[in-house]
Image (spheres, rainbow, N blue to C red):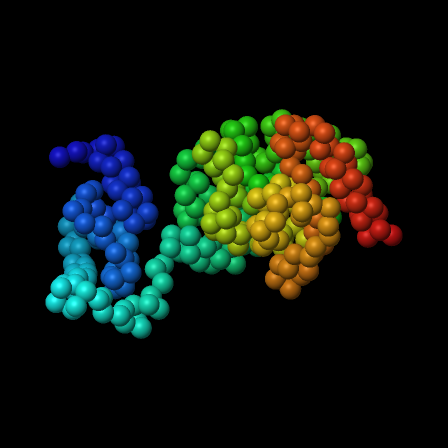
Length: 301
């Protein structure tokens, strides 16, 4: 039997598998969870791990109730080759996804946050986003704690993950130069992303990952209290505007983002990483920056 760190790591790995719904190494037939509404995916693993945790304490674990057996598969020959209709109860069953569970716990955690330092601490404790398992650091924000302009990008990259702050790599340096062109610096803005952890391989964050992080981001927006939100990149724009169009259709247009009781002006533009790959698009980004500068100037009059 494994002891010490090896056993601890194995138990942690199995717990992670359980959260993903993996509770069997191999099965002869696939499991249809739609026909097992009384048992959540991963329940068997969680029960086994709970029992392992009680071994060293001398307390007996609570025996979980056996899962209901799936209904027998009807014999096509006996029924004339037709399957009986599904019951109404089964057709209404909606499985609980890990994203839904994560978003629910995120809403509870975010509601208790009253400052950016508390937000950081809550994110450090949060285990509802799978991105955290492969990231080195949590990237919450850089810049001013309160600012008239809040910038929201897509996700941390390699440099951001190493340093623990958003937009510090090549794209971040280009963003700083772009802000300087309209007389703004890091001290004048608040910069963050729609997710707080680097996706593996610098891939684009999924809508589900952004959804899990959204309660924290909404609370962050409330704490920063910006007059204008600048959204950078297609994934961020789709998430923030709940849109399906690409960034070329979303950019250059003023929209409203509803956060709590506040309605905040928002504007989408091209991500600096895209501008590094496509320098010809900088002229479009410059037009967007001029719109931002004009809006900030009008709101200060």
